[in-house]
Each structure stands twice: as structure tokens, then as C-alpha cells.
Length: 463
Image (cartoon, rainbow, N blue to C red; front, side):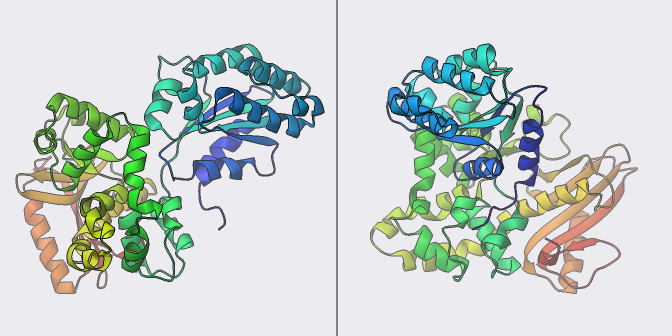
């Protein structure tokens, strides 16, 4: 399959590459597994002088030996090919000598950099020394790429790291935008693409597992619920790789998945100390698996006591709701029963929540491009007691406010009118400049009738 999207990331990398001869570059690329970091590096390296070095869990000496062989092959150095270096000192001294003779920059990418740190905790100090003393004035673009988000932040980016302040660019690679899903499933209509997004998110590796000739639910049965396929257990494997106490993190994620959203509810359900749960939630937020939400009208969001937590990684959300708790069905070969009795009856409601998240992203994109009635400073949701509004956008300077309801269904004109009537009643409960604000209303649904003057209407044709 051809490379998809990443225009912004490629532009940033290209800008860094062009900094020579003014300076060398040290770029840190990180993000959860499966989002396409390696393909991004390889795509960027096309038509440019580059060496791609993939770290493994072999011995330190063997890894350095393999790195030396790849560099020697690039430079055509028969002596090093015959007797490769097996120490970091020999490796970097050799690299520096070769770079001094170059007039054009070389991209040197270390993928799975965290494997090197696991083998030798001195690696950040070693790389810092040779960057400062040998490489930073030479024609090189050093790329450090890793999937263990916590380790990359702690060992490479944090102020306690020897490499702190050395990176010239940092790229946290997220999943793709929804609009690119059709390139993976060109035969899918928009409705099925939203269902696909709700199941897998927009993670390239996962999308490539599904068969574009099968319906999303058929793919779930034959691919997701196949214990020999990576999708079935990837959620557990990724946690085991990333965190020290995967059992506790899994308990927290399960609690959130089944509707426990406040720290106290999560701690009680997971049978964990509330103080520890707070730390675990911070880690999960850093991994982009979980997000914290507060009503959009809160003046101090970080200190608000109204914060709730939701799983925002759609693969994990689906896996935790429909796969992991029912793994015995799969072990016993009862996949069809699981789909019929557990997944299918709850799937529409599940997709509806994912569609709401997608609508929020769409609103943010439209706001950035000037496609909403005003340019809003804050976009989120609002709730108080049992009352909730899916999307609310605020412009404090002009005192403009937009209220939106999101429905995963086909709506007729009368149903839209009813939704707007209910939305206006709920809007009156939102205490925000009530005496002098200008209000706008919107309805977002799977399918909507003709446009109307009193509200913004959006359906799948607008996504």
C-alpha cells in the first residue's frame, strides 16, 4: 500500500533537514506502537542520504556491531566491514570521521531507541556526550525514535535526562485523521468508515488487518476475534511493554470502559489506592489512551473537581468493552455467539460515542478554518447533574456560544425540530453570560434532511 498522509510531519522533518549548514539536527520521534513512526522515517529518507538503524534486544555488542556494518556498507568501508566496531566509542569515533568528509547532510535514524536504553541505562549519557563533542557541528540529522512513550519522555525529553535540551525538534506521532480511512478501505461508504473508526481508530497497522471486501462486523468476527491475530491481544501486549504494573493499569482501563469516570469511582472499582490511581491516570493520559474532560465552562480546568476520564483510543475502547472481558468465548470457538449476543446489540450505541468524538474533532477543524458561526476559543462538552450537551463552543470576547447535539441515526425534519427544542431547554441551564450572549445551535447526525436557517446541520456528507 502507498504511504498515507503525514504531510505535516514530513514538512517538519524537511525543515530540519534544510537547517544544514547552519546547524545539525537531533529529532526525537515518539508515540504509541502501530501508528506508523517507522514508515514515516522511511518515507522521509526516500531520495535522501540516510541510514536506518533498527535496535533489537540482542546484546549491546551485537547491536553496535550490526550498526557498524550498516554504516560501513553505506560508506563502502571494507576494513570496518571486515572488523566492525563493538563499542559506542568506536562506533561514534568512526561515524564522526566519515561525516567530517561530507558536504551534504546524512540522516541517521535509530529506531526502537528505548531498546538501547533497556540494554544500557548509560545510553542517553553516551549519546549526549558524542552529540556535544563530535556530531553537533557535523552534517548529520540524528533521529531517535521510540514507542515506549513513558521511557522516551523520561530518558530522552525530561529535564533529568542527559539529552535534555539537545533535541531540535520533537514529534509525537498520533493516529491518522479520519478523512484518510477511505484510502485503506476504498469500498466502504461513510457509515462503515465511522464504524471502522469506532473499532480500530485510525491506526495504520490495525487498519491493514481488516479485509476491505468484508463488512466491519464480519472483520471483527474473523480478524479481531481470532486469537492467532495481533488485534486479539495487542491491547495487553502493549501495556506489558509500556508500564511496570500492567495489571493495575488494565484494571483502571476496564473500570473506565464500563462507565466509571471519576477518580473515586475508578479506584473503588479497580480496588486500588486513590492516590495511586491518580498517578496511573497521568501515565495513561501521557500514552494518549485516556483523556480528562471537564465542562467547557469551567474557568480553571486543571483544578476543577468536575473532571472525568474517558478512553479516547478507540482500539482500546472496543477491545476492553467487547473482546478482553469475553476472551473465553474466543478460546471456546464461540465468536459468532459473542458477536450476536454481546457486540451487535450494543454496537450502535458504542459507535454513537465514537461519532461524538469524531464530531468534536470536526468542529475543531472547522473552527480553525473559519467554518463555524464564530471563531471560538473553547470547544468541549457540558454537563451538570443528569443534563448533558454533546458539544459546546465558547467565544468569551464576543460572548457567543454554540450548542450542538450529536446523534448516530438518520433524522427526519420533525425529529430535528424536537432535538433543537430540547437543546434550547438544556442550553438555558448553562450558566455563562446568560443575560448578554448570542446563541447558535447545531445538530450532527448520520443523515439529515435539508438545511435550515435556525441551526447548523451536519451529516456524514460533511465529514
